[in-house]
Structures are given as structure tokens and as C-alpha cells.
Image (cartoon, rainbow, N blue to C red; front, top):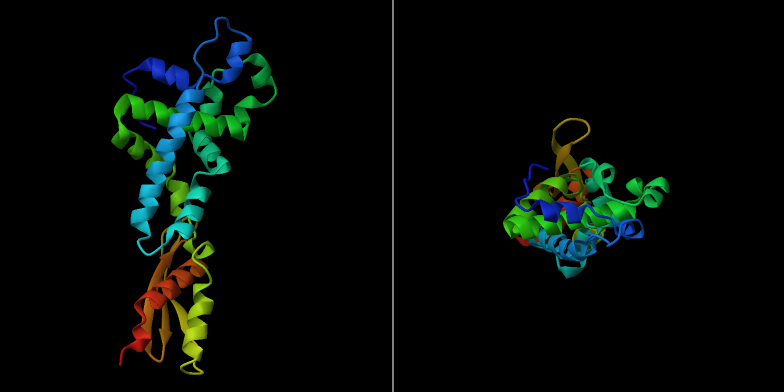
Amino acid sequence: MKYHFRDRKLLKEALSHPSLSSEIRPAPPDNQRLEYLGDAVVELTVSSHLYHRFPDFKEGPLTKLRASVVSRPALAAAARSLNLGQVLLMSNGEAGSGGRERDSNLCDAFESMMGAIFLDGGLDAAKEVILRLLAPQLETLDPSLVAGNSKGQLQEILQKLSPESPLYRVLSEEGPPHDRTFICAVTWQSKILGQGTGPTKKSAEAEAARLALRDKIWQSG
């Protein structure tokens, strides 16, 4: 994660599961308050990122994209990338029942850590860490899943003008096999109506169709 806490008490609190209160008296501060704060910081960071990344998306699609990035499984996966489960401070009972691998605990721990970083280093520091840790989820977002059936909409509009259907072709493929980036174009009557980029051919085609719907090049002479 490459973040060094100035206040180590915040780090300890972020890693303290509420179950500790069953074994330690007086009960130490647990991470629930930091989780509450971190939840807001994570949501703000992802919301801002998506807002600027998809300038043509309305509230509905942006909300759906954000929900997929900040879902419990997604945040738990980010926590696993840090091995947070192995360093969580929890009761023997919680640990013995699989608490170190439980998604709910890992998600809470991730949010708590982000809340602690926010308090310790400020919003910019928290944003930097959050975007770096959630990069896998952000990079694999498929905007076609929330942007509606843009290919179908484009086909319907163009077929009212001509029986000729739009054609999609892959312009380029970049990156290793496990992390490909596709660039696709949609053409109609020898005109390029839009070019889209995405982690799959399908998503790149959908993005090309969405941009074609936005630009309406077929209306030009």
C-alpha cells in the first residue's frame, strides 16, 4: 500500500475488530467508527473518478458503476490484496470461525483503513491509495452493462434511413492476454461513426455505438 502512518494508534484502531470486546476489558476502540468514515471517503473517491472518466453518463449509469466498484466483494478483494485478514486484531472465536477470510470483515477493514488514512494524511492521500488499490476493479469496468443497449439503439436509428446495417471492426488490440485493451470502430455507408475502447471486444463495440449516438455523424452531409 506504501502509506506510512504518522499516528500508529489510528492504524491499530483500523485493524481492531469489534469482537475484541468479548475478550479484552476494558474493550479497546474498534474499527466501526473508522469504517463509517472510510465508507464515505471511498464512495467520494470512486464517484469523482467515474464522474470525470465518463463525462457523458447520467446519474443512473454512474450509480450502477460505482456500486460495482464499492461492493462488498470488490472491497474484500482489495483487502485481500493487502493481506488485511492476516493482521486483523480479533477474538479467538471470530478467528476460529473463519473471520479472517469473511468478506464482511475484510470489507469493513478496508473502509476502516481508508478512514484512518484520511484522518492521518488527508483526502488527497486517501484518494491516491484508494484508486491504486481499486485499480483492478476500475480497469475491468464494462460500461456497456449500464449504458443501455447502445448497439441496438444505433441499429434501429440507421435502419430507418437505409437497409444497410452498421459494421463493427477491431482496429487494434493492446496489452498482455490477461489485460487486453480493444479499440473498435463502427462504420455505416463508408463513414466512421464512432470509436470505442474497452477491456473486451463487446464493451469496445458498445462504447463505439454510444459515442456514435452522441455525435450523430450520419446526420452530416
